[in-house]
Amino acid sequence: MTSEEFQQINPTLPRQPGIYKYFEAGGKLIYVGKAKDLQKRISSYFVKNHDNYKTRKLVENIHHIEFTIVDSEQDAFLLENSLIKQFQPKFNINLKDDKSYPYIVIKNEPFPRVFLTRRLIRDGSEYLGPFTGVGKVRELLEFVRNHIPLRTCGLNLSENNIRKGKFKVCLEYHLGNCKGPCEALQTEADYREGLQQVRNILKGNLTPVIQRFREEMTRLAGRMEFEAAEQLRKKIVELQAYRAKSAVVNPRTGNVDVFSLLSDERQAFVNYLMVLNGTVVQTQTITLEKKLEETDEEVLAFAIAHLREKLQSINRQIVVPFPLSYPDPEITLTVPRGGDKKQLLELSLKNAAYFREEMRKQKMLRLEKKDETAQQKVLIDLQHDLQLPALPVHIECFDNSNFQGSFPVSACVVFKDGMPSKKDYRHFNIKSVTGIDDFASMKETVYRRYSRLLKEEQPLPQLVIIDGGKGQLGAAMESLESLGLSGRMTVVGLAKNVEEVFFPGDRESWKLPYESESLRLIRRIRDEVHRFGITFHRNQRSRGTFRNELEAIPGIGKTTAEQLLKAFRSVKHIRELTQREIAKETGSRQARLIWDYFHPEG
Figure: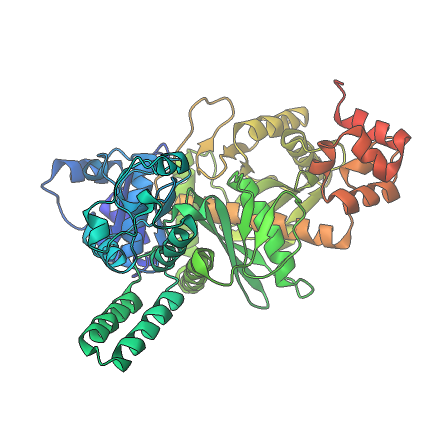
């Protein structure tokens, strides 16, 4: 990426803390960095000549940039480290060693020890953290040990060893730092009570601990022991100031998908955070056109299915801002009231709010900026970059859409002179394809579109974009060849999520200059066909106009199909059922028909 190319995207970068990711042309992550001010930090790579060879080489290899906004520098610091450990970018050499951030572990053993560690061992122990500073962790552990007597020795305090009297109390017992569980002078129940106080402190659940110290402080003051009471008061202040736990990187969170929604009368903005092993690894925000009759619950449920399928998430828990009905019975939906998941939800909402504001600014720029001369220049650039034989004043783009493996549809959007021509948009209910087959669906859609144009003697586009890559491009070309249209217009495939262009028969992709006006136009066309297709698909589902795949089975009518979907929620789930499970809803004869349809080999 050149400095000139970067200046085009610089105004879109936020002036907020977060992490940024640099990718090379092939889409491989090559660098992760953190910043207090994302725009200022990222700009520093492109506004001066670097003496350091590594930095110069990094800038030469940057193809595109992604970023995630977080709440604080501390969260950015932790998230950067976690992503580097997970993806090992080749330019992050300073953080590729075996060091990691400290955790406090409650060991899985009789009378568990509590100590600092940098290694997470999957032995059933409980890990709290990570923490940003070792000094803070040591100070915290020292505070715990001064007020909650716990053992520090490495003895095997099994019930059998204690009963046999194998151990003797040590100096820690005589100093009052341990209650002597090694000689059965402390019960496991009493020890567990102390551990719960430790958990309360380390997890940030400070209220019961503070209340306990306040009661003790009052008791000491009543006995005129003011010096000891003052020491407790200071400890209470320290506890109230303790907030070292991070919501962005926390192994206790596990694998979850987090969704938030901002909406008005016309549009909805949905942000998605994919969390793996407690780390935010992907961020995506989409815009949905909102209809008057649709609730926020319906919009969010649709966006969840779309984004999870697009990013191939297999997480079984979803965090959402409000209760909603979701069609997959294997998914658990959680509406958090507090804790780590609540903070992740707030972080997702923060990213959605930034995206909405950025879209508003870009819309204003498009309205003020483009005149006929500027639009003409964009088309000339696109013709040059794709080496088109004619100026692409008429462009058409196709995309397929389905929901939960059912209800396939396709959409076609038309751009003329670089602007949307909405009166020419078309949508297609797939008629000739059984089940979900994107290639066959694209073949049918392209054939229907251009056979109609030929029949009505309408002008053909100079450029046709097939959103979906090589496979769907090949299917589209089969239809065009059968119509005798090969060579009469340029047809390209656009790889999903990668923005690489494929020409028919080419093995290698064609990459447009990053952030060029040509690529901006193709992105806009792609986003428009997604928006148009999703809106049509949602409207069709809400009106119940789809003929679902079950109705395509000979001997299965609409009533039976609706009964099955009501009971099992999705065709995908029904496909996985046994014949006996289906028979509970339909009877044995129809269950056999359905099972044979989905299992022709068996």
